[in-house]
Amino acid sequence: MAYFLGGVVGMATLIPPLNGCLPRMTSGEKRFAQRLEAKLEDDYLLWYDVPEGNSGFHPDFIVMHPHRGILILEVKDWRINTIQKLSKTRATILTSGGAKEMFSPLEQARIYAHSSKGLEFPVVAIPGIGYLPNTHGELKDEVRLMYVGMTRAMDQLILTGHQDSTFGEMLARVV
Image (cartoon, rainbow, N blue to C red; front, top):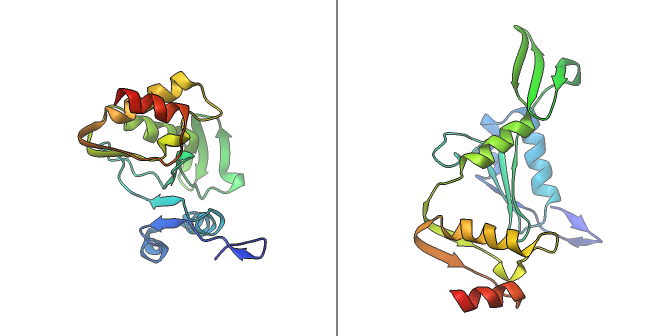
């Protein structure tokens, strides 16, 4: 349980629950999952090792917040002295069998995120449209993102929101 200013904050929800994941987690993934659950507020959802799209990829963690979006994370149990070379896209790690070159964790997460492009789903839910546009983004980028999300729905599109906003009003006029 996390505490903030003397009060209970709540914990993020890990899916599947931590006890069900522990047997297949590395030690680094266990520590990271425990920290994510404890440090993030209760409106965060965390998925561990779930298949993503039709790609067959299984990112270590997918973190979702209804207003902040989705973050894909890869956790590595590398020791600092085994990292031979590391860039944004590639990593060379010293293993018992010699040096091994692979994608960096950042590049792996990027590949996972891009692998879902173009996929369609029977039901698509886009929560919190009243919070758009993002105060850090341009309206045209938010409209483009909304369009992409909406066009992924094959059978049913669910839009939710509870705030009045210019974007919500614009969307209500065209939908």
